[in-house]
Every structure is written in structure tokens, then in C-alpha cells.
Image (cartoon, rainbow, N blue to C red):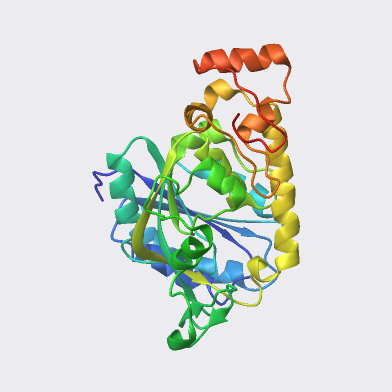
Length: 326
């Protein structure tokens, strides 16, 4: 089979999803984008997930340019993601959980945008919500799943997040570092330019909320694009981590703590997009106690701060205790 477009590596970390994994893989088989390699790692599932993966392999061998299926003793999400990335050969990476579904045109539409916009490293569409039986669901204002559309406040994840953040996902604030530090708002089902991992780095157990950590790293070096089109089905069921709000809060805080340490020791010359944005706007601010980049810089030695200011050719100004421009 001959392909003219870039290779896309679809990565699936699988764990205890015997009821969903074949449907997830079939949603990739059905992609309109043709040049795909499929890499799946079963992270020590205790159910029949691995057996279900092997049963669908003949169909995958016919469809994809390369197929890699591996199983391992349970190592956790971060280690599994890193192994998946190490096996990938594509110029673009598409990550999907083993219980979710990609719409047929998802990769095609996201690839089309990224291939024509080199200053973007990530492209993603909106998410619909599905239940354990793949029925479409909706959300109320507290992000609870609602089965009846007439009783719901939001039809998609994108609608829900935009209502809380008060900015359009079609604006430049989508995927902006400062907005992401406040809260992760990137939907699932994203296509990533593989080269950005050379700058952003791979996953770490120090940042257990791996998708949030990845978004923070990418936003330091490139832009992200939201396509106003439902391209992904996110499955809500009892086993979702997102349903355990206390665990999510702990993981979020630990991830932010690790990011804080990264910023304190960061090479800001390699983070021009995000740092320039803060300085060129001529302001800095705090929101709910979040330490933004300018505030981080004020903790550094004076001679290092001056070097950074000179790097961006800006005037030195001070920051009061509320971190508003003066």
C-alpha cells in the first residue's frame, strides 16, 4: 500500500478495558486518514483485555502500515506512555484511551490543520460524552452526566468548559499557558506534532496527571488549535479517574507542584512563546494563588532576572504584593 501523507502513530495504553478495547481499535480502523501505524500496550490488565487485542490483530495487519501489540507487567500510565512514544515512528502522534472512540474523520481533519500551520503543535476537536453502552449523554453545570438532552445544560465537553472559563475556544487563549495553569481545558482526541516532544520531554511520575502535564509543556513552545467539530467520544463510566474528584484534586496539585519546580529552574530562552507573551503584555497577575511566570522570575537572583529582561528587550518593572503591574 502506498501513502503520500505523513505517518501518524496512534498510541493506545490499555488497562482492564475488555468491554471496550476492540471498539476503540475499530474506531481507528475506520479512520478516513490512511497512513497510520497502530501501537497498543496492555499494561498488565487483570481481565481479558490482552486476549481481545490479539483477536483483532489480523484485521489491524490488513489496515495499518505497521502494527505493534505488546503486553507488560503493570507499570502505570506514565511509563506506558513513554514506552508507546519510544516505539512510535510517525511524524504525528494521536493518543486515545482504550475505552474511548475517535470519529472517522478525526485524524484527517486534525492532520489537515497541523500540516498547513507549522506554528501549531496540537490540534483537537470537541468531545461528546458516551456511557458504558455507547449511548450519547450530556452534562449539567456540575459536570454530572445527564441522559436526557432536554434536562442537560451542555451537549459537549467543549461547551461545558467554555462556560466556566469565559473565553472562546476559537480564540488565541485556547491552549495558552496562563489559562492552562489555571485549569486544563484541552479535550481528548488530540493530534500532536511529534517533534514537540524533543522540547517538552516525556512523561514523569512526578506529574501524575499526565495529560495535564503534557498540555502545560507543549504550550511553552507552540500553539494549540481547537476545531469546532465533535471528533471524539469520551466514555464516562464508574471506573473513570475523573469521577473520583478527591483523587483528581490530589493528582492536579502534585502535577502543579512539579511544574512549579520546572519553572524555577527553566531555561527561559527555550520557552520564548510563553515568556514573551507575559512580558509583551506588560503585566502579570495572580489568580487564586497561582504563581505565574513573572512571579517565578522575581524569586531568582537579581543578575539572572536582569539577563532575562535584556533577553526580551523590555523595561524592568516591579511587582507589588498582589502581583499587578505598577
